[in-house]
Image (cartoon, rainbow, N blue to C red; front, side, top):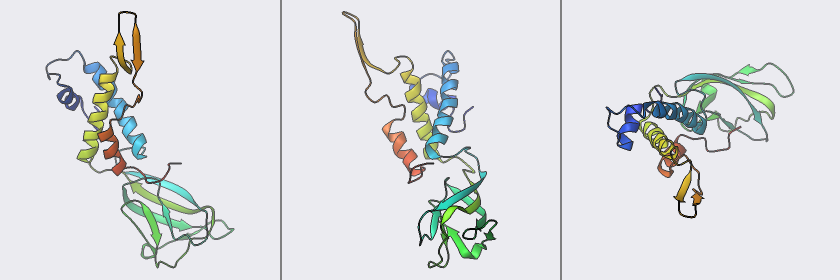
Length: 193
């Protein structure tokens, strides 16, 4: 059984009666594939709440925030700032930072600056879903239906028999536009590493 969608959801959206089982194996393959696609698209390694330990570069002077790699952020356990040119680090107290709903960790007060350098900020935080949002479940179902429907014609847009001719679907996309729009809500706003 998948995390984001189920066999029964796909049967409902494709119009396959529940009692018909001849497509179950193909649907199950699609359901598992869709889980991987969704996690990749939203930048998580697991749909459940997971702990991440990450280091971040501070590339310019005057930087007061960093964007965590994964959202939604559930909690931040520790933020450590390495001294300039040194090793180790200073554990920040929670009163000295906060994080936004889109995953930016900001220093308090606003004039506090991060030191520049590679891997100078270490953050231990949790991100993921305690329960999967309904819009993600729907997007997963749309993607699964698209994938299920594409398998029979292998991406052909049209095919003729007399004087055989075919044309391929120019998109080749497995993610329908509505599903992509829903995923954008849960995606990072900048390029992934």
